[in-house]
Length: 119
Image (cartoon, rainbow, N blue to C red):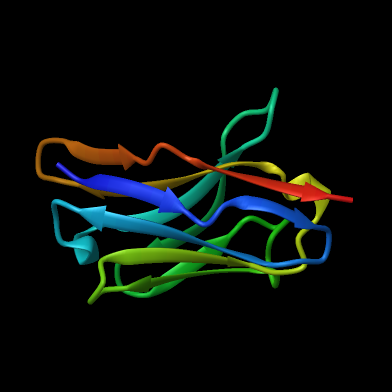
């Protein structure tokens, strides 16, 4: 069982920056693909950034060159650095840990942290 706790959200003006943290416990973080998702009111949850075990990262087109995902293996923490924030980045941001086993997959979510970007 993996526990994920997000922090770092808040209210920021357009053009500002935030860094989200996802503190994990319960398993070796290096086994998992770690991702940040977001869900805006009335919209579906979408993938923002992903750090695949092994070092490959991918980003949604809307956040490329503005957001950076990273993981600190020693601290078992995943970060999302968000620069040049826009009002359309306003959403609840969720941390996700995913891996596949022999017979099943493992999919864990945090409780989310609110990010609000004012214009």
